[in-house]
Length: 231
Image (cartoon, rainbow, N blue to C red; front, side, top):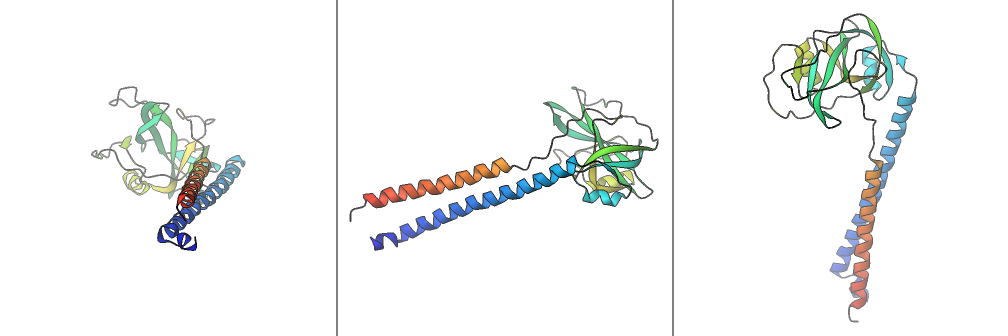
């Protein structure tokens, strides 16, 4: 019996079971991390919005609702293409908001569907009067471009990716690396249905259960084979 237990196949099975169980506990740790992130984000989004005058402070306020003062750069707007909202293809209207002489923040004013007419952009004009707006902050995610299109200097400019450095160069503005999503209560916006952050806790718990079940199945199969072997 001892020889059977310490046999090479038996040792490999033990190693595999240990590996599967370790993966399960790793997924549980990941779920705890995501749960903690969700808690922090919930606390940030539940806090009362405060006026932030220093643009660089916004970079540390991801997921917070904040107030910012300045004016829109009405003649330097971007059309963020290839967006899908409620099964409709369209674009987000991204308008620079100048906070001081040096820094600006890009404001997502909402979604507009193409309605089958990619040759026609909706009226997105806006005045450049001084104002205070409320936005929720999120870091830009640079996605790969679906197709290569020639970039022109004409505004509003069609873009496929939020490359802040490139957009700063094209607009001649110092855009900080964070996006302000205009709150629904604010005027001068379009359709806004911002998705809340979801940390995939359930996904990690599902993966953990999967690894544990695989380890259990391997253990039961190994035990049955061991019991069936002749002494």
